[in-house]
Length: 239
Image 1 (cartoon, rainbow, N blue to C red):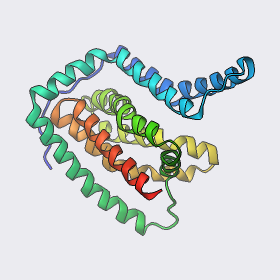
Image 2: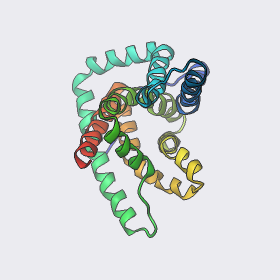
Image 3: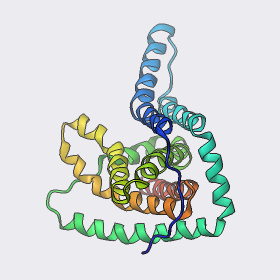
Image 4: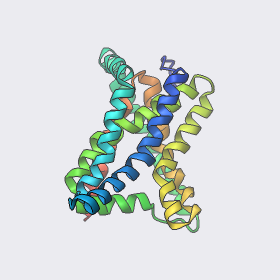
């Protein structure tokens, strides 16, 4: 599949630092602060913050931070998405086909590999959907896609791609996959979990291609929303 040339943003140093700041806040600081807030509210004010609220707070905070830090980037890219609407939709469709083909290959590789295990992130998602179906729809379909595409495809892929195409795809994939797996590797003390990074290769490459071809971060954002929406629907019907 030949990739056509479409300009995408290369963030200056200030934008890259904003991305690093958002990454740290999203993956580490906001979840920890939410836990501390819940514990403090219970101990000092006899006020219980529900588990549902604790689940939503870090995502709402990260979503708002994404809007604040990257407002101009998101607005400009939304204009591009509608100005090149046909190309944006075509890029989304091609990225779907690319992801589908790559997923078939990855599934075949995993089936042939000895000692593969279930993805702990998928297991956790299934449990959360069973317990908190509506909040998980909000998180997975609306909040996380905008945060993660801005970070992994917008800041990381877009900036590195302009210097080295291969590294752009590689590093954005590894960081995207690691963001979903590292906490479980640490929690269970089992770094073999990181071999499951390959499961995140198809969507990561496909959505980076989608961004590259469309020239708008909103194309992979919408693809990510659709992908997660289908996943949530499938999990809800399995439980």
